[in-house]
Amino acid sequence: MALEFTLPTALILIDNQSGFSNPKTISHWGTTRSNPSYETNLQALLSAFRSARSSSSTPLEVTHVFHSSTTPGSPFHPSNPEQGIRPLDFAIPASDGSEPVFWKSVNSSFIGTGLEAHLREKGFRQLIIAGMTTDHCVSTTVRMAANLGVVDRYLGDGPVRLRSDGTHENEGSVDKGRIVLVGDATATFGKAGIDSETIQTVSVASLDGEFADVFATEEVVKALSKVQN
Amino acid sequence: MALEFTLPTALILIDNQSGFSNPKTISHWGTTRSNPSYETNLQALLSAFRSARSSSSTPLEVTHVFHSSTTPGSPFHPSNPEQGIRPLDFAIPASDGSEPVFWKSVNSSFIGTGLEAHLREKGFRQLIIAGMTTDHCVSTTVRMAANLGVVDRYLGDGPVRLRSDGTHENEGSVDKGRIVLVGDATATFGKAGIDSETIQTVSVASLDGEFADVFATEEVVKALSKVQN
Image 1 (tube, chains in turn brown, cyan):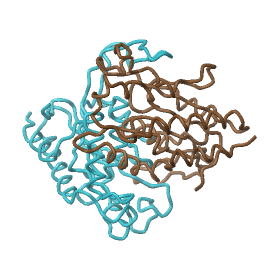
Image 2: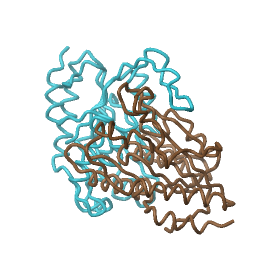
Image 3: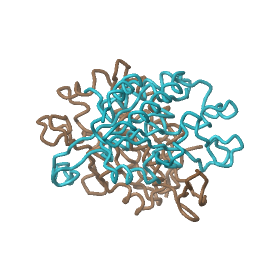
Image 4: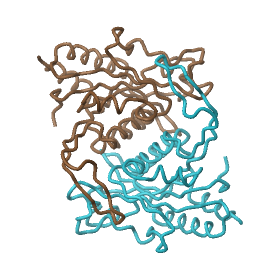
């Protein structure tokens, strides 16, 4: 289904922080990283979204999620001298305070943060998700966004309740929102002897269709260019 | 770190249901499935756990999670004539009611169920997780179990709170429990042109060390055989 911006939409950018790029800390994650175009794609995505936002009558919001580790020695612990928690230059939140920032200390952007309440309160019905790393924080966030139904609306009795034999106590209608993963605006590291591009490809394939629809940066940017007042 | 059963432990078995094995419905998921030994490994695991339970002074519990789809036509919808929601013969809950059963309708065993409250109330500090499918329901459940900290105990001020600059408002001590994924007692399907064993291997590698410790069925069975009064 074509990508449109007719629903109130939040661009959720995850963990675009120095700790994943600083040569002094990158070895913490692995020696190879997938998707050399991640930085340029993420930058293009954010730039197009900000432009569309300024000319759209439908609410569009850039939402940043950053990681602060509770593990001493982690590149993302606030005390790390390399300041790995610092946003990358191309992903610094707008200085006018118009782009909400959420800090997390686990992989899911929905645990220990106010993100779910924020999205529901503002009525967002579509999420565009990108960032780092594909198989850890991005994957966990996409999975929970879908399973929590943060962009869905129940028209009847609310979420289905299940009896002890697996039958449904109620099965109300749901007006499904949409979760989009920008597959080539994410990146990850190799692990367990598996190269980073294989981890990337499999991680995206496991999310596609089950938890999110996957689009390329170019497709999202093109759809954003059609946003009009 | 060696596997031991000195902590109160729940064996969480996910979606061991006919819908993943019935030739009439299996094509819904894909043409190839990983790990031909999944059935025998799952059976050996459950059998060893039940034996250990009967001779252990530490609480051990078998917990079954099953899936009931809200999508008409799904092999797991209760109305499907092939009865895909039926537990596989080797994974039928004990007839004496001693093995709690939770039904879910999304991938995560923790959303829309009482599983988290149950585990916390009973004081389980170790989870042994196995079942289907590796990259969808098993992966999502393992991720949330870890991120929710269902087996952890806070000794001080509770979960860390984060300030708007990413620094920690508090950073109390945590007595970490343990989450174990039985890597070869899980299975999944190929997708997006990627073979099922690659999906399996990558899915387990992405969980290992970040969300769970991965052990083989043989290692778990061996550790269970050492459980004594």
